[in-house]
Amino acid sequence: MIDRAGRDGAEQLRSQLLGAFPSVARAAARQAIDLVPPADYSPLGLIHESNNAKWPAVTFRGDDLEIPGRIYNTFPAGAFERLAPLSRAAAGCIYTRHRDGHTRQRALGVALSADVDWCAPFVVQLLGEYVVEICIDVEELLTDGAMTYPNVARGLQHFAESNPAFMALTRARATSYWSEYYRTDFPHITTYPAIRALDQIRRRA
Image (cartoon, rainbow, N blue to C red; front, side, top):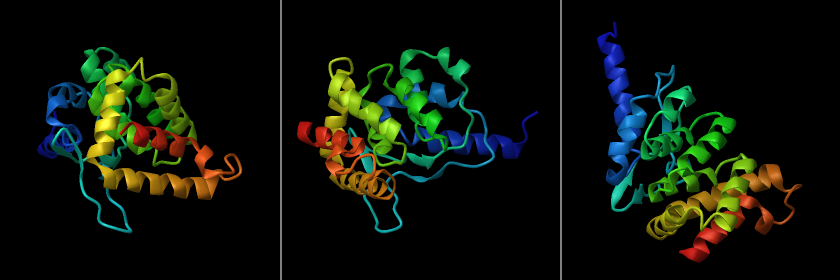
């Protein structure tokens, strides 16, 4: 039997995760969210929050989004395989926020699987994080996959145009990670995959 606290916690999680999606995607997202198992910790922070400054909320197609910085819920891959394509893509978007980098990289492929434009905010956020292998995946998507994922490409263009402050924040984060961890592998910042990907998005926008 699920007690009152358990039901309240599940409903709070559902509300938090649903707020990460624009209205056009929420029907698909609900199906994915119903399969997200409980975790010991609630989602942490929002992707547009920073300790150094107050940043505007991220938006997509006119909707404000509240995308968590991190989630701690186990990735139920088998359950997600049974979802319809749009809901499976929504599940991938949710798990790009997972605390584990390997899970985030795996989730990126799931998020892209249905070629939906509303995955764009989740893709951009990955460029402002520390796992360079994921940044390489996104750069390859932009370089070689634009024809394979035309809706994703259009979504990235729209998102960049609508969220200049968040794009600047993401670039600052990417620059910080390059400076701290990746100067040896990428001696000039213009060769760092996250920056190269952001430059491609900016040129298309």
